[in-house]
Length: 165
Image (cartoon, rainbow, N blue to C red; front, side, top):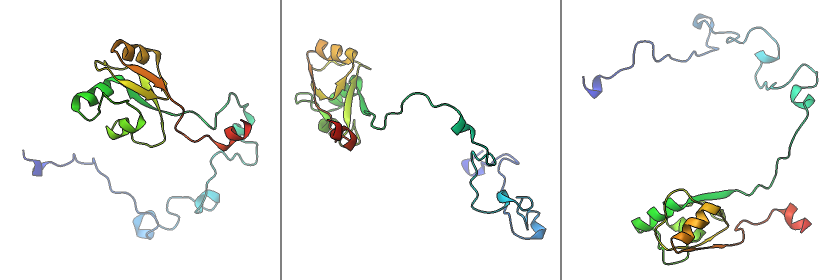
């Protein structure tokens, strides 16, 4: 058997039904939507509508709190940092901050808070400048002879936080 002889099993692929294309197609006139009514017409979005009764999502009690301004961290593991140093994409002799991590390809977005986590092994003596670090990551960095400096958040504060402060 050759690659150009490969094909799907019989019945594995089925063409879509083209509705509203005349009587002879079997799905003409009402196009499978039934007769009359709101759902037979276009532009209908009645998700959660219960015929004028109070919808269940409005009847049930609400619990908890949804923070509109969550602190979102870009996660960086020390094992990935060590691999970047070994590959030569990250200079371990200089302080490792968000810009250096972005240059090494470990971060994508700008103005993001970096959290250092302890997954992997760190052998190089590196000084980090990050927004946050786990206890295990801090221990691993200090064990390798490095240091961690906690810096201020890179993200601009939302208007709600600046007004109350």
